[in-house]
Length: 439
Image (tube, rainbow, N blue to C red):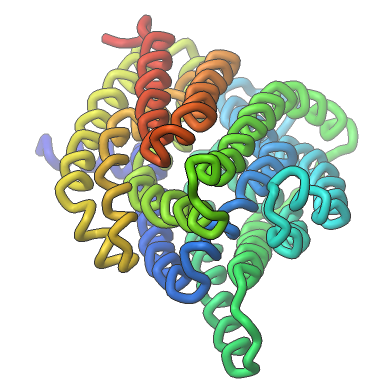
């Protein structure tokens, strides 16, 4: 009888079901992504992956500028509508967010396309990224549509659509790259990292179309949108500012790694290959279990916002305590697995011994890495966005210092030590900020 009652509770709990759906779709996406990265490692090589990875700081910066803060803002306001009844509906907040996000995305795409050469030569410091950045510009508007609609569904605690769109995006990305590869092989066209960027574009278009098709856009009065726009914008501005600053520093970090590896004595090709092995092979494997913790974080933010609005302090304390316990236990289990199996995994998955060594060294960050995303979501849900911003900024600065001063002396291992120190600092800082909610 107790088992049946507990089962009904878990099935009816939107946080648990949402986390489960996002975890399943995230795990499937990452499994597909593993085979995709293995395919890329054999088609464009470690150096090609390194060049491909260099565009992601720019992509992340564009996303943070056009969608990240707005997505969180939509999710928070939509979640609060169910608690604080008013004259604004969930769709009003979604439409307002889409207006803001699409306006920014078109401006960003226009700039990225026209200034690709400047960015490649003077910012990324790799001229071969210029054509990749032009292709990437097409993905940004579609990515913002997908992000805003996902934020809306997270707010109403219905994770099915974001889960399916996430999975669809990954499937279309992989299939499109595979088809482009075969067409180019048949026509004797050289294979370059551009095929992977076209995959991003195809995946974003597919997920945007799918997400849009699932929403019934009811008529929203002009005065309601005018009222919702400043609310969404007011919350989104600090969130966007935080993400932009963090991604600027993260971009500096990603660009510095190959440059400092050259200072350590590696050739340009060897530096890009090492960067590609770390960011395109070893780190994605370490990040694979975050499909669980990130899913929990996404569903926790609106749940914590709703609990905070309703004054349910015990509910927040319970969420914090359980998050810390389960994330740490899960992280320690992953540390043991990756440390013992790092070298076999590197050889089996990527046919690369260096990636196996990186996996073993990176295994020690697992408990702290998996905990931070969950605790940051709780703090954001409580409205303490400045706390998460400064802690994340300090964490990136620690990694930057290790990149600047440790890599030239110790090589890539110096950066890996910086990763561990920064994650320990971030986990401790976030936990300290939530001390009043820890039972």
